[in-house]
Length: 159
Image 1 (cartoon, rainbow, N blue to C red):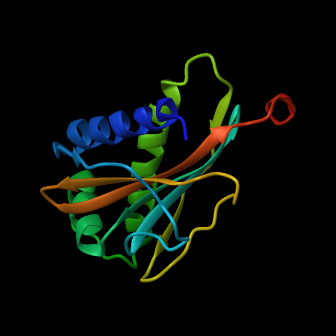
Image 2 (image 1 turned 180 degrees about the horizontal axis):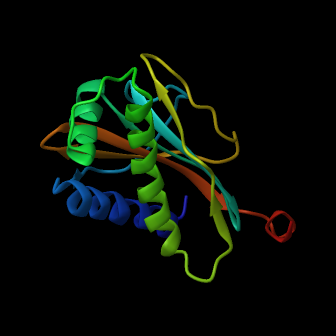
């Protein structure tokens, strides 16, 4: 996978967490993901279409997600709350929106986010797109950004 496609997401997750939550993210070494299981129990998913295809997942342990959402909303929300899922979805939306802005002059769209909460869930993307795991550490705990995107063929981009 092209590092130029991954770098905007690394920059974006650091920017969103530091500006929105005053929570610096220490990014670890990216690696290739070899399973469909998400890294943690709370995952927000956004699809990408246009000149780039694929999906991006922000996955966090439940305790980390609760702490980050509390920083975002100003209150501790239960994971069963619709507001909790909406907040987690908005976090991935901000990350992907910021990363998308760096793909200047490209026709790229992002989907409405989906959020999955629970142990051992899976997110299955396109089999022809490798997924890069970008681990991060914050004062609230761990997170992983899973980026699986590639340039679309010229025919798909035109459609």
